[in-house]
Image (tube, rainbow, N blue to C red; front, side, top):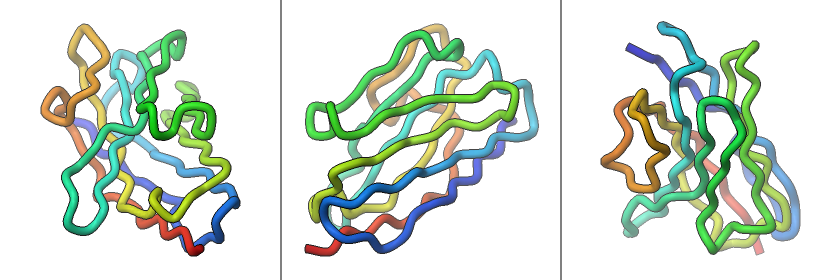
Length: 124
């Protein structure tokens, strides 16, 4: 079992920046691929970014490519999502996910563990 706790979400103006953090506990962090998904009111959950267990491979949704950066610090059991040039359409609950599977997933059903989420609101 892995427990995930997100933090860093808040209200920010369009064009601003945020750093989300996801702290993992309960099991060895290193073998887990990690991801971020988001869900806005009335919309389906969507993939944002993912990172391999070693940090050597990263993946991004087209909507955030060039603006968001995912990274991890395995010594701190933490994964980060750096969000720049934020837009009102980035407003959503952002959730951290983890999976011990062999490949990095881009779909929500490929992940086994989920945090509670953190709210990001971007005002225009």
